[in-house]
Every structure is written in structure tokens, then in C-alpha cells.
Length: 178
Image (cartoon, rainbow, N blue to C red; front, side):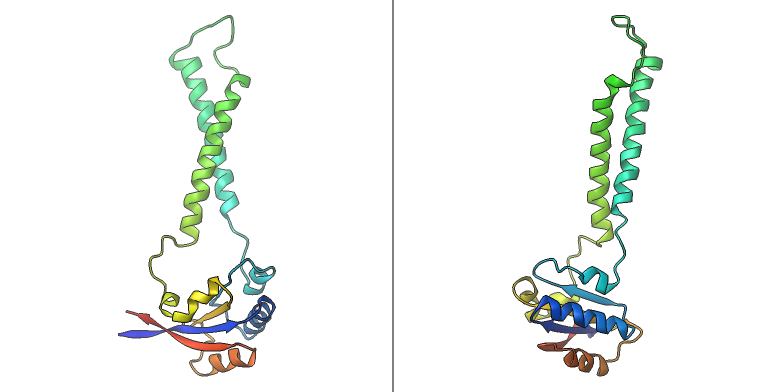
């Protein structure tokens, strides 16, 4: 049993895709996906995508790394095993900078990688668009716009007609396997 995932429209240029996305969004569609062989300037804005929170994840993890590194070095040098070496204090900030920096970078990189995977919903082993044979051209020479059937404005016959009026080379329904 399969059900309709949505409609896929192919465009031959990035400009045509961006213009179609703008016009489709102006009609009230919100559940859109665009696939291109290379980054297209202005496509994120046309799709209405927000800025990624990934930078905040990295900043928070770096802050945790700084705090953990300083706390660990202070605890081991001043509380757990206080040892005076050459008249130096139990804890000093300047000798702690390299370890603090390294732990901040390590935790920020882990947060970035795992945050990116979580925000992108990866690993995703199946997507209904993979069932479309012509979809492979999106990584070669086509610019693809997918409109999901779960969009409140979607209509099974009017949406493909709209995409054809916007200059799509081909418009196809995509079935989702259950």
C-alpha cells in the first residue's frame, strides 16, 4: 500500500527554481523541499528557512568545555592534590589556557556534528523522493522542487497545474511506501 507523498517539479535553471519557490510560497505553501546540484543563492530565503541554531549549540558546548577544564584544573591543583612547585600558586589561569582551549574546541566540535545530524534528521535511510527515478538528476543538472501532500494548501490536481504554469519541465506525483 502506498500513499501520495507529494508532487515533484523539475526546473532547468536555478533562477527558474528560485522564482517558482517564491511564487509557490506566495500561494501559501509551506511544506516545500528544494534539491539542487550546487548551492543556490537566495533559495534559503525563498523557502522561508530560518537561521540555523547550530552556532548556539557550539557556543554552549564551548562554554561547558571552558568551565569543565578550568574546574578540573583548579580542583586537581588546589584542592585534591595541592603541590607547590617552584613557588608557583596552586592554580594559575595562564598555564591553564591550552587545556581550556582544547576542551572547548573538542566539545564544540562534538556539539556541531551531533547537532547537525539531529537538526537534519540524519541518518535517514529512506525518503520518498528516492523512489522517483528522475530525482537522481537533482545532483547532476536539474533543480527539483517537491511540494508535500501534507501541506494544508496542497491539492492533488491544482498543485501540479500550478507548477506547470510556473515553467516546470516535468511534474510528477511521488508515492510514499507504507
